[in-house]
Length: 250
Image 1 (spheres, helix red, strand yellow):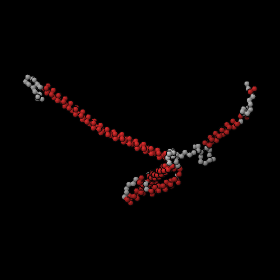
Image 2 (image 1 turned 60 degrees about the vertical axis):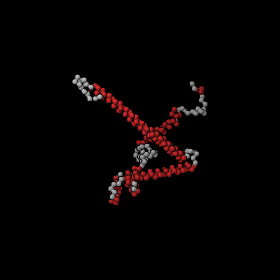
Image 3 (image 1 turned 30 degrees about the vertical axis):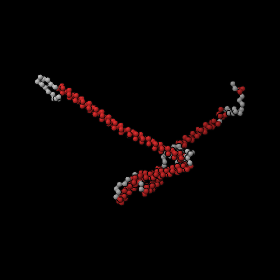
Image 4 (image 1 turned 90 degrees about the horizontal axis):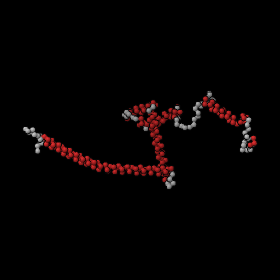
């Protein structure tokens, strides 16, 4: 059957038949494409699920293993701390001794590391000052002439024991000149009321005058309380030792 549109002399044509066959062909192609799409989508979903399943199991297993490791580490830390504190009566004296020994060694090591780090930090901070710039320039020139090194960081210079010793000596001189600059401002020791001078008995002081006036007022109140008979003419009576005469009471 021809798909070419034909016209006769009488005006007859096969255009409708050709259009119907073309429509049916397109409809069939749409159905085929839809079926292929569904099959591909289903296959891709099956492939994705087949990959996701094992990954989910692996993730769950890793989370479980991680929790077991964390719980086990926490258990050991708590047991070691109990041995150090001596809170577990079932632990032997040897266990407590060894736990404390290792803990003391750890603290000593941490103390040494802190002192080493602080020395490097203080040296690096000092090298950033005007006094430290001279040391930096001198060391840069010396290293450049000896090894050809043109750039050196402050941190590298701060790790040099000789430079550390030199900086310590300069800081010691600064301490002698201005010892108050290094006082710990967070010290909570007792300090007197504001207004007191360093020299007692020199000049008037408002704070001392106020304290003296308060003391005088308190002394006057005390004397007033001690002399009720002279003030009112009434003699105090100890009612616990002398009976009360109720005949004169109305």
